[in-house]
Length: 192
Image 1 (spheres, rainbow, N blue to C red):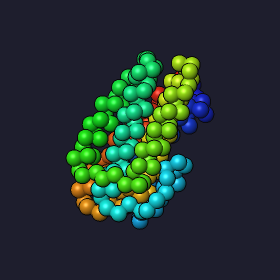
Image 2 (image 1 turned 90 degrees about the horizontal axis):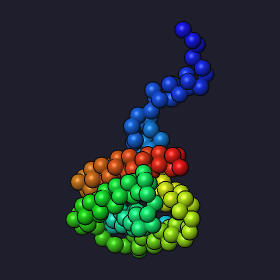
Image 3 (image 1 turned 90 degrees about the vertical axis):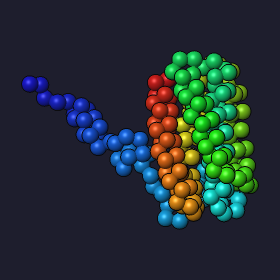
Image 4 (image 1 turned 180 degrees about the horizontal axis):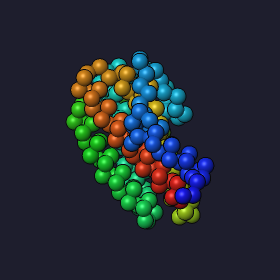
């Protein structure tokens, strides 16, 4: 029997300790703050703290719309292959999530308008890439950054600001969905 190479042993040990997206052993494991605090996310806009569940859901709705816009642009630009499949999944998932969030009485606020404007700027900046490969890479990197920022905001502010149990449960389920999407986006980046 051949001895295990060091790199193989390390990979086996690391794989054994990793759960699925959002699990306690995952890099996307929840780190929910005990009380709301602004998430340090550049360009997210600071303003008055979120006052109620409707404003928290308004932030989530702004995020969902931003991801729809980014993914629709990628499809329109014809990114092709796995990247286009990922973009189509994004549109389908975020459109469904946006409808659900709006049905829960999401309300726009100064903060959600700032988040929305940030997403529009990201989509516009990504769209400035002329070369198809550069555009595809910019799209995937923007998606990774967006999901990462949403997870930070979820843990630092959205979940801790939620007052109703139904809203907290909805956000916890949403967090798991975003963690899984974050993992898929990172996998897509690593293949390009």
